Image (cartoon, rainbow, N blue to C red):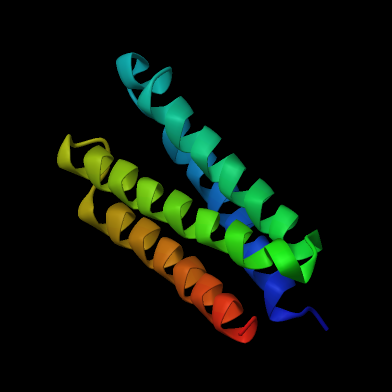
Length: 114
């Protein structure tokens, strides 16, 4: 049975996997700027969660605070894409819900460290 910390890593992986095909549909002028920034940020989110999972207890909190910052950056990028018309409100809602779920799980993980 997977621990909740393994589950959050899977959620980040699933979000990256879900997002890549959406980013590939961006217009050429955004594909190599905004789409790349989002994909890089999602990849870094996944990497940070994996680092936090394997980090000693003494630095887990610091790693997870970095995850929260990355989530906030991603929220802004996804909102920007919606605001400039790169996808519809249903897609935006889906992205927001997935990010919020990862955020709640990160918060729970942080609380468990106290």
